[in-house]
Picture 1 (tube, rainbow, N blue to C red):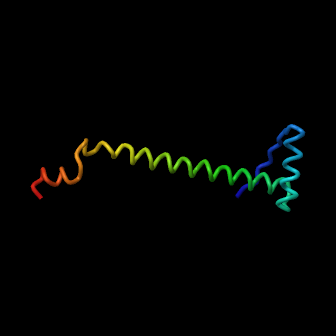
Picture 2: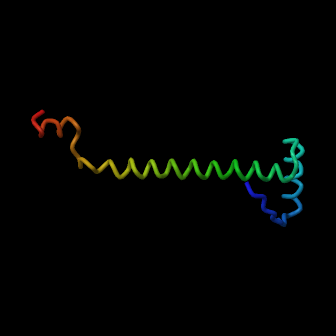
Picture 3: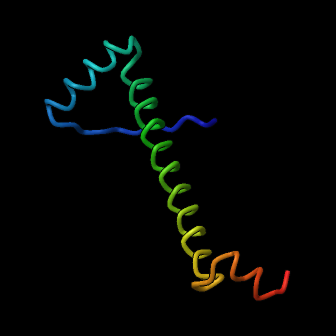
Length: 78
């Protein structure tokens, strides 16, 4: 994809942590930031999907009211 240049300002301790992470990961500062951002973004997307699924499941719980499937079948004379 396209490359975009951004400038960031960090507290001294955060800058040191970033340098330590990059050294530990054996990547450049840029690559380290990219990987950490993408990892966090993937977590956020996963959480959104789970919340959407829970919302759909939650909205489906009231479809049959308080009746069980067995009661529904019985009322349909099946």
